[in-house]
Image (tube, rainbow over all chains, first blue to last red; front, side, top):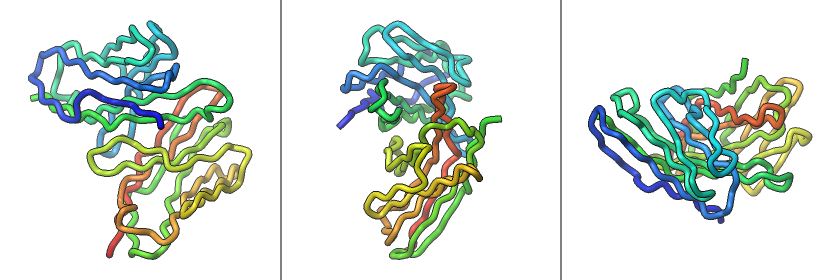
Length: 115
Length: 111
Protein backbone atom coordinates (compact mmCIF):
# COMPACT_ATOMS: atom_id res chain seq x y z
CA UNK A 1 0.00 0.00 0.00
CA UNK A 2 1.05 3.56 -0.66
CA UNK A 3 2.22 5.36 2.40
CA UNK A 4 2.33 9.14 2.64
CA UNK A 5 3.89 10.27 5.88
CA UNK A 6 3.64 13.75 7.35
CA UNK A 7 6.23 14.43 10.00
CA UNK A 8 3.94 15.99 12.62
CA UNK A 9 0.28 15.49 13.54
CA UNK A 10 0.13 18.68 15.61
CA UNK A 11 2.26 21.80 15.58
CA UNK A 12 2.01 25.00 17.57
CA UNK A 13 4.04 27.96 16.36
CA UNK A 14 4.26 31.66 17.06
CA UNK A 15 3.47 34.47 14.65
CA UNK A 16 6.51 35.33 12.53
CA UNK A 17 8.22 31.96 12.92
CA UNK A 18 9.46 30.06 9.87
CA UNK A 19 7.66 26.73 9.73
CA UNK A 20 8.58 23.58 7.81
CA UNK A 21 6.03 20.85 7.10
CA UNK A 22 7.56 17.67 5.76
CA UNK A 23 5.97 14.97 3.64
CA UNK A 24 7.48 11.70 2.43
CA UNK A 25 5.94 9.08 0.12
CA UNK A 26 7.29 5.59 -0.40
CA UNK A 27 5.80 4.60 -3.78
CA UNK A 28 8.04 6.47 -6.19
CA UNK A 29 5.20 8.77 -7.24
CA UNK A 30 6.03 11.63 -9.56
CA UNK A 31 3.32 14.00 -8.36
CA UNK A 32 3.06 15.54 -4.92
CA UNK A 33 0.62 18.11 -3.56
CA UNK A 34 0.01 20.34 -0.55
CA UNK A 35 -3.54 21.26 0.41
CA UNK A 36 -5.01 23.12 3.33
CA UNK A 37 -8.38 22.21 4.76
CA UNK A 38 -10.61 24.68 6.54
CA UNK A 39 -14.18 24.15 7.78
CA UNK A 40 -16.73 25.04 5.12
CA UNK A 41 -14.06 25.62 2.48
CA UNK A 42 -13.06 22.06 1.67
CA UNK A 43 -9.58 21.41 0.32
CA UNK A 44 -7.63 24.17 -1.36
CA UNK A 45 -4.47 23.53 -3.34
CA UNK A 46 -1.39 25.47 -2.20
CA UNK A 47 1.39 24.05 -4.40
CA UNK A 48 2.11 20.92 -6.39
CA UNK A 49 5.09 19.31 -8.04
CA UNK A 50 5.34 16.98 -11.02
CA UNK A 51 9.01 16.17 -10.69
CA UNK A 52 12.08 16.78 -8.62
CA UNK A 53 12.92 20.48 -8.40
CA UNK A 54 9.67 21.33 -10.22
CA UNK A 55 6.91 23.29 -8.52
CA UNK A 56 3.68 24.91 -9.60
CA UNK A 57 1.45 27.34 -7.74
CA UNK A 58 -1.98 26.15 -6.80
CA UNK A 59 -4.98 28.27 -5.91
CA UNK A 60 -3.66 29.85 -2.70
CA UNK A 61 0.17 30.02 -2.78
CA UNK A 62 0.56 33.37 -1.04
CA UNK A 63 2.62 33.13 2.15
CA UNK A 64 3.93 29.67 1.27
CA UNK A 65 6.84 28.15 -0.61
CA UNK A 66 7.82 24.55 -1.33
CA UNK A 67 10.90 22.46 -1.89
CA UNK A 68 11.33 19.17 -3.73
CA UNK A 69 14.97 18.19 -3.72
CA UNK A 70 14.28 14.45 -3.75
CA UNK A 71 11.48 12.57 -5.47
CA UNK A 72 10.05 11.13 -2.27
CA UNK A 73 10.02 14.35 -0.22
CA UNK A 74 7.94 17.49 -0.61
CA UNK A 75 8.28 20.24 1.96
CA UNK A 76 5.90 23.14 2.61
CA UNK A 77 7.45 26.26 4.09
CA UNK A 78 5.65 29.10 5.83
CA UNK A 79 8.19 31.91 5.57
CA UNK A 80 6.65 33.98 8.37
CA UNK A 81 3.70 32.26 10.01
CA UNK A 82 0.54 34.25 10.57
CA UNK A 83 -2.62 33.44 12.52
CA UNK A 84 -4.64 33.05 9.30
CA UNK A 85 -2.43 30.11 8.41
CA UNK A 86 -3.84 28.11 11.30
CA UNK A 87 -5.30 25.13 9.47
CA UNK A 88 -5.10 21.40 8.72
CA UNK A 89 -2.42 20.78 6.09
CA UNK A 90 -2.68 17.69 3.92
CA UNK A 91 0.02 16.25 1.70
CA UNK A 92 -0.88 13.94 -1.18
CA UNK A 93 0.86 12.04 -3.95
CA UNK A 94 -0.16 10.35 -7.18
CA UNK A 95 1.43 8.30 -9.90
CA UNK A 96 1.57 9.19 -13.56
CA UNK A 97 0.53 6.80 -16.27
CA UNK A 98 -2.67 5.34 -17.69
CA UNK A 99 -2.93 2.55 -15.14
CA UNK A 100 -2.73 4.91 -12.17
CA UNK A 101 -6.25 6.30 -12.67
CA UNK A 102 -4.90 9.58 -11.25
CA UNK A 103 -5.71 8.47 -7.69
CA UNK A 104 -4.55 10.79 -4.92
CA UNK A 105 -3.13 9.26 -1.75
CA UNK A 106 -3.15 11.45 1.35
CA UNK A 107 -1.09 11.68 4.48
CA UNK A 108 -2.80 11.85 7.88
CA UNK A 109 -2.50 15.63 8.04
CA UNK A 110 -0.76 18.22 10.21
CA UNK A 111 -2.93 20.46 12.37
CA UNK A 112 -1.00 23.72 12.62
CA UNK A 113 -1.91 26.37 15.16
CA UNK A 114 -0.24 29.79 14.88
CA UNK A 115 -0.52 31.87 18.05
CA UNK B 1 -16.82 28.12 -13.15
CA UNK B 2 -15.48 25.02 -11.51
CA UNK B 3 -17.44 23.86 -8.54
CA UNK B 4 -18.31 20.64 -6.78
CA UNK B 5 -21.31 20.84 -4.49
CA UNK B 6 -22.37 18.58 -1.67
CA UNK B 7 -24.85 18.89 1.13
CA UNK B 8 -23.17 19.54 4.46
CA UNK B 9 -24.86 16.98 6.71
CA UNK B 10 -26.59 13.62 6.56
CA UNK B 11 -27.94 11.60 9.46
CA UNK B 12 -29.07 7.98 9.17
CA UNK B 13 -29.90 5.11 11.52
CA UNK B 14 -27.59 2.14 11.85
CA UNK B 15 -28.53 -0.56 9.35
CA UNK B 16 -30.19 1.84 6.92
CA UNK B 17 -28.71 2.86 3.56
CA UNK B 18 -26.99 6.22 3.19
CA UNK B 19 -26.95 8.17 -0.05
CA UNK B 20 -24.50 11.04 -0.40
CA UNK B 21 -24.94 13.26 -3.42
CA UNK B 22 -22.60 15.47 -5.37
CA UNK B 23 -22.92 17.72 -8.40
CA UNK B 24 -20.03 18.90 -10.49
CA UNK B 25 -19.63 21.33 -13.35
CA UNK B 26 -16.67 20.20 -15.46
CA UNK B 27 -18.04 18.01 -18.24
CA UNK B 28 -14.49 17.03 -19.22
CA UNK B 29 -13.89 15.26 -15.92
CA UNK B 30 -12.15 11.96 -16.48
CA UNK B 31 -12.41 10.43 -13.03
CA UNK B 32 -14.69 11.04 -10.08
CA UNK B 33 -13.71 9.95 -6.59
CA UNK B 34 -15.15 9.46 -3.15
CA UNK B 35 -12.89 10.01 -0.15
CA UNK B 36 -13.61 9.38 3.53
CA UNK B 37 -12.11 11.44 6.35
CA UNK B 38 -12.35 10.30 9.94
CA UNK B 39 -11.83 12.81 12.78
CA UNK B 40 -8.28 14.17 12.92
CA UNK B 41 -7.13 12.08 9.96
CA UNK B 42 -6.29 12.52 6.31
CA UNK B 43 -8.47 11.53 3.37
CA UNK B 44 -8.79 7.87 2.50
CA UNK B 45 -9.76 6.87 -1.04
CA UNK B 46 -12.97 4.83 -0.87
CA UNK B 47 -13.85 4.30 -4.48
CA UNK B 48 -13.82 6.00 -7.85
CA UNK B 49 -15.42 5.79 -11.25
CA UNK B 50 -14.20 6.45 -14.74
CA UNK B 51 -16.33 8.94 -16.65
CA UNK B 52 -17.46 6.42 -19.27
CA UNK B 53 -19.13 4.25 -16.60
CA UNK B 54 -22.63 4.63 -15.13
CA UNK B 55 -22.24 2.52 -12.04
CA UNK B 56 -19.63 0.84 -9.92
CA UNK B 57 -20.22 -1.50 -7.01
CA UNK B 58 -17.67 -2.43 -4.39
CA UNK B 59 -19.03 -4.48 -1.47
CA UNK B 60 -21.32 -2.11 0.51
CA UNK B 61 -20.54 0.84 -1.75
CA UNK B 62 -22.37 1.74 -4.96
CA UNK B 63 -21.40 4.71 -7.08
CA UNK B 64 -23.83 6.09 -9.63
CA UNK B 65 -22.82 8.61 -12.27
CA UNK B 66 -25.28 10.62 -14.34
CA UNK B 67 -23.13 12.52 -16.84
CA UNK B 68 -26.07 14.32 -18.40
CA UNK B 69 -26.99 15.94 -15.07
CA UNK B 70 -23.36 15.98 -13.79
CA UNK B 71 -24.52 14.12 -10.71
CA UNK B 72 -22.56 11.61 -8.68
CA UNK B 73 -23.84 9.63 -5.73
CA UNK B 74 -22.41 7.24 -3.16
CA UNK B 75 -24.71 4.69 -1.58
CA UNK B 76 -23.55 2.88 1.54
CA UNK B 77 -25.61 -0.20 2.30
CA UNK B 78 -26.19 -1.37 5.88
CA UNK B 79 -24.58 1.76 7.33
CA UNK B 80 -22.57 1.17 10.50
CA UNK B 81 -21.41 3.54 13.25
CA UNK B 82 -17.88 3.18 11.85
CA UNK B 83 -19.09 4.85 8.68
CA UNK B 84 -19.55 8.13 10.55
CA UNK B 85 -17.10 10.51 8.87
CA UNK B 86 -16.85 13.31 6.34
CA UNK B 87 -17.21 12.18 2.73
CA UNK B 88 -15.62 14.19 -0.07
CA UNK B 89 -16.53 14.02 -3.70
CA UNK B 90 -13.72 15.01 -6.11
CA UNK B 91 -13.33 15.29 -9.85
CA UNK B 92 -10.20 15.10 -11.98
CA UNK B 93 -9.95 16.54 -15.45
CA UNK B 94 -7.22 15.22 -17.72
CA UNK B 95 -7.67 18.35 -19.83
CA UNK B 96 -6.66 20.77 -17.07
CA UNK B 97 -4.85 18.16 -14.93
CA UNK B 98 -6.66 19.51 -11.95
CA UNK B 99 -8.51 18.02 -8.98
CA UNK B 100 -11.57 19.80 -7.61
CA UNK B 101 -12.94 18.76 -4.22
CA UNK B 102 -16.37 19.31 -2.76
CA UNK B 103 -16.75 20.80 0.71
CA UNK B 104 -17.60 17.42 2.20
CA UNK B 105 -20.72 15.79 3.67
CA UNK B 106 -20.64 14.92 7.35
CA UNK B 107 -22.39 11.57 7.83
CA UNK B 108 -23.66 10.79 11.31
CA UNK B 109 -24.85 7.25 12.00
CA UNK B 110 -27.26 6.91 14.90
CA UNK B 111 -27.25 3.67 16.89
